[in-house]
Image (cartoon, rainbow, N blue to C red; front, side, top):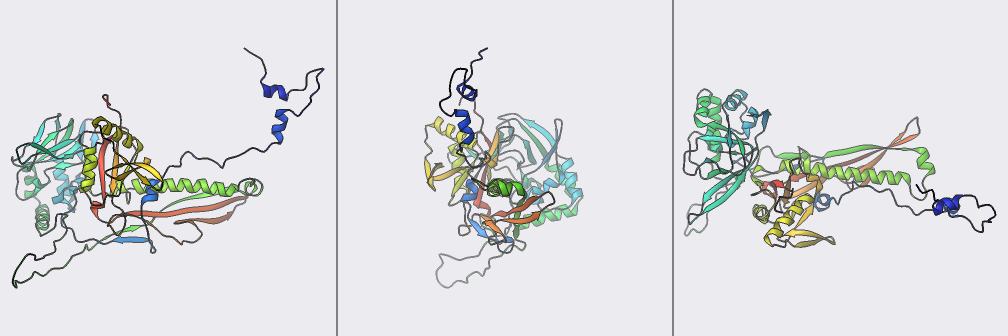
Length: 476
């Protein structure tokens, strides 16, 4: 093992015997030198494109009410299951997510229906239902992916959509009259499904008048005049001649519109007075502590805007605006489907790994997906719509994530951020820093708070591409 000293170690030693030191050593000189420093760095800071892109609406009263036209057709929900080993059961209250059972508060009827669901397994390519045959089952997809297939104008097979975990088929089966399947349902992957035969539903409904009355009321609402979005129709006359009697009409509103309360993220910043008094050269310690604390709060704010169960965008996207990928990884076909579901799509938001997976799919097809300039930055884009990286969307343990597509702004009936400015001790818009005092240990405390929320003004303002697989496939 070498024992040769490094140059710095040699400089730090006393001069050798018989030698005279002619100049100041490097090690000694370093003790008197002034280093060039950076401000404290933080790895947790991201680009926070969502906070920068959302139009922020001033909420002076602390809450924001979204008034909408009356909607008869309630959006289809998702069903939740519980699993014990290989056995899967539906949570009874979750059956109220089916359109004709929405709003039913009869726990006994829901429990009786839940008990009559039968677990079935389907292999890839196996059919659950065939177009034109009686719709005599409700199918709840506990796990897997099912494709709805129709017939085109010239007899060719067409893909009508995909249903995945938590979705269902045959919701109208629990109606007063059984209809026919309008499509063929085929398993794309191995599927675990809970099936309710119509005979089992009729058995329960025959003993429960409240259930029958509720279903009849829902069917009556669904049969009222409405536009393709499910809103109460406005009677109009057009293309007529002469003097016919014109229809009278009015625009009905929701009686209980949703109100969004501002949420809060807070922390107490503590700094010892000795640090604040003595160690402020060349940079202010309190200022740097506050800067990094605010960065952490803003990161949490963006996470909440995506994932909060009350107002987060992932949880507030209408179920009619959710689609599943056709094959697993995000493809140009999937992005086109998202675009086709709304007007004036302004932005896609995706996890960086999802963007990379989309790039691989484009490369496979020989497609260049382009870019767009936003605030001096070049971002990937599809059909001219920028794709913003958003790590807060997260990637699940099974390698799947979601992609958001949205229209933004109040004027466009889109997605907006909510905040209140001008609050006491405001440090940044919607964020304040309040002095809380000095305790007996000479520690200064500051309360740092930021208030925020987000609102989706109409359902088609926000769409979600679900079950996006981001891991590389063997042939990638």
